[in-house]
Length: 155
Image 1 (cartoon, rainbow, N blue to C red):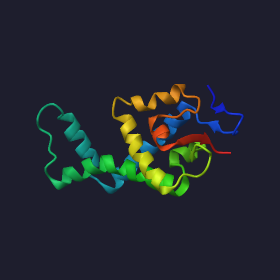
Image 2 (image 1 turned 90 degrees about the vertical axis):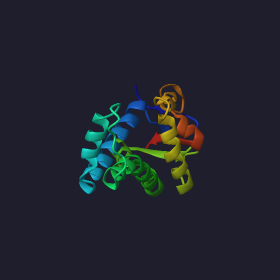
Image 3 (image 1 turned 30 degrees about the vertical axis):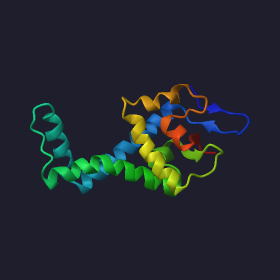
Image 4 (image 1 turned 180 degrees about the vertical axis):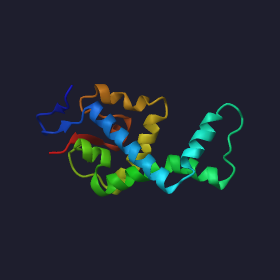
């Protein structure tokens, strides 16, 4: 399956697998950065997720709270900064895609911020907000529709 080319605006919308591969690269980048700058990060992940359902979760100390916060905040900050400065993340650079307004224009910082939070919302109910990417003619997920953005292959 290839990205879809639309004749009236000549955009080639990014296919779901390109978007997914870019996301995997971005998750890897963020996790490597967290592991380097927060040595307790992986220890936190292992200890607390291994204890799910046992009542032994420890979120009280700053040593465990900081990685927990970073686990959720770092990806959002990463996306906002990359989309705001470059209209693409490192994963999107690798896959030659970019985020654009529906008219093909560059997104602004406000759109980058709203898109990052809409991205999180799209993932909350079992990632259902991403399903429209499979069927929508512009390959837009919920976060794209909410922020009036598209992901296209860079020309």
